[in-house]
Length: 134
Image: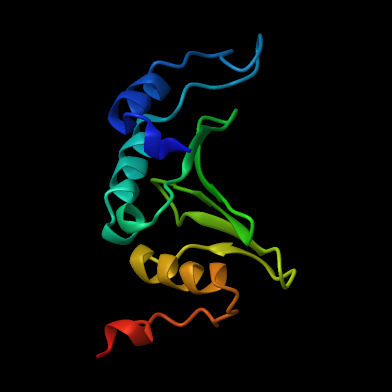
C-alpha cells in the first residue's frame, strides 16, 4: 500500500506520465487539477489516521483512483476537480455495494466507511460517531 511510499514523490511521478503510459496509444497524462485534489484528499485528518493508506492508481482517462482493499471490504474514490467525486464501496461480509457521489464532507464519509469495515452497515448519515460524542 501507498503508506510505505513517499506520497509527494509518487504524485510527482504521476504528473510525469505521458500519453501512452499504459501501452502504446492508451493512457492519458494525469490531469494536474486532479493531482491537486488528490493531494488535498490525502491530507484529510481521518485518511491520515487510518491504519492503511490508499493505493494511488492512475486511470487511462487521465484521472486517479484512491483504493483501499481489505479483507472486510473495498473502497474506491475517484477525485474530480470540476464535479463531485465518485466512490464505489463493497462490504465483503454482507455483500452491500454502493456507488454514488462523494459528499463534500470527506471525513464524515470515511467515518462511515470505518464503521462498515468493522462489520457494521451504518446508513450514510453525516454525523459524528458515538466514540467522539463523549
